Length: 146
Image 1 (tube, rainbow, N blue to C red):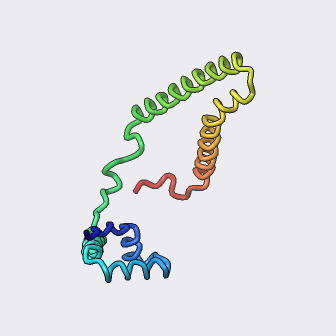
Image 2 (image 1 turned 45 degrees about the horizontal axis):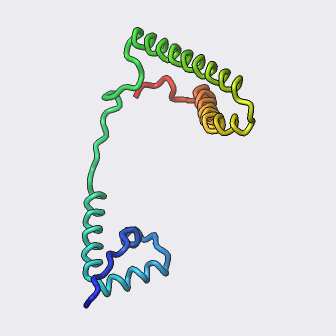
Image 3 (image 1 turned 30 degrees about the vertical axis):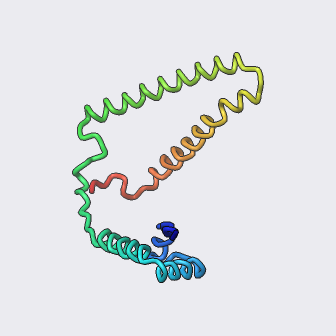
């Protein structure tokens, strides 16, 4: 009873198309293509899809189609107050939760396990925020509307 050929790894075929395989992997794909018509068909199909995707043209929307900044003073004030209120609420709730947790937890390992992950995220977020704020001072295009 003849065994049906196993499907060839699409990642290898894709890498073969892109020319990103090692010499050994390229040889392996070439041998597979010589022996298996299904792999040749699959490679031809992937090549056609790749060519069609590369030929597709995308016209980006105009810069003023989706403005990022508030359009009026009222929306600027309401957005700023909303963020301020939300941030204050988050700080108060987080502070109260942290205070209660530290008051009830006695084991330092438990404190580390509970606070390590959120603390790491907060520190990473803070580092990105500091970099963004610093870059605002030196951004030559800050006040320029596109």
